[in-house]
Length: 76
Image (cartoon, rainbow, N blue to C red; front, side):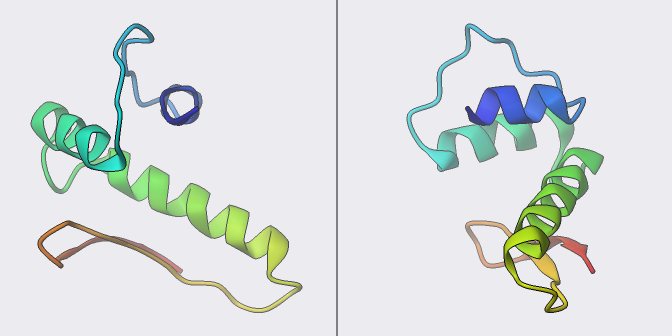
């Protein structure tokens, strides 16, 4: 489903490519697009929209944090 989501956001990931963990997918995106890629801002924005739909009107801010603890994208 992650690959479908990314492709739907305009982030091309080959459909035959398989990822067993979120870490593998993250590492693939970093290697392909770089650590500050617009791809991460798109993912962060999608997470904010999803959280906003289930938050019952509460304000939502989304942060995407790297595995080393760096904030690499913020939406909100």
